[in-house]
Image (cartoon, rainbow, N blue to C red; front, side):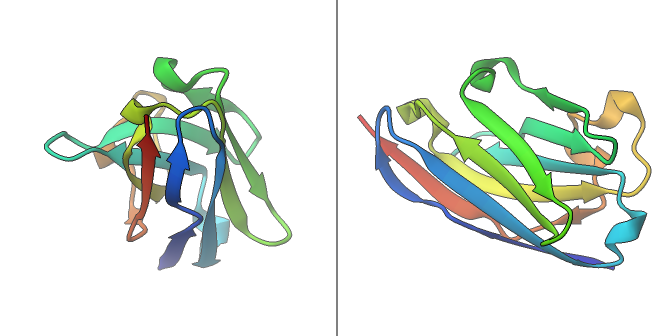
Length: 125
């Protein structure tokens, strides 16, 4: 089992920045991919960013150049640094982990085995 606990959400003005943290514990040696997803009210949960154990990263187009995913392998924390935030970034942000994902499943909810409880990010205009 792997446990994921997100923190760092909050209310920020448009153009501002936030850093989300995902504290990871348990059998994390089994994990090959760490990701962030988000879910806005009335919408499906969508992929935001992923980082693989080898350091490869990928992002959904609307956040490229504004968000950065990283992992501190000493503290076992996955970060999502968000800058130039927009009102459309408002959502609950979830951390996710996958044991042995295939490349095509990395942007998909079903590609992940473990999920955190989420942290709310609200961007005011």
